[in-house]
Image 1 (spheres, rainbow, N blue to C red):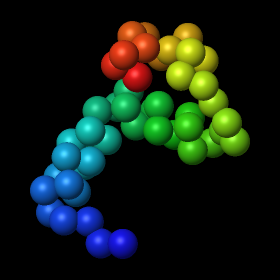
Image 2 (cartoon, rainbow, N blue to C red):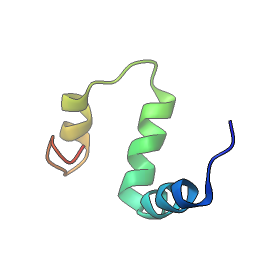
Image 3 (cartoon, rainbow, N blue to C red):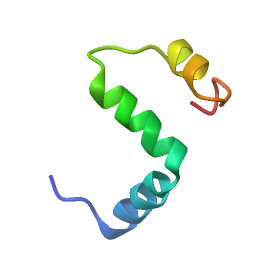
Image 4 (cartoon, rainbow, N blue to C red):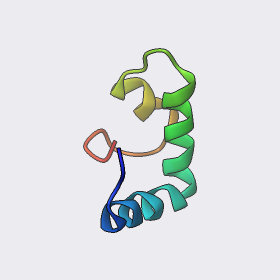
Length: 49
């Protein structure tokens, strides 16, 4: 499914942040991972996650 340019720009900006990219990698490499576990591994608040 094609992504419109505005949405692509928002995604690209989000993934430009190294911590967000690390979180995405962790999610991609796990079959299942809960928000609480991600919050334990990365220094961000649960609402931010």
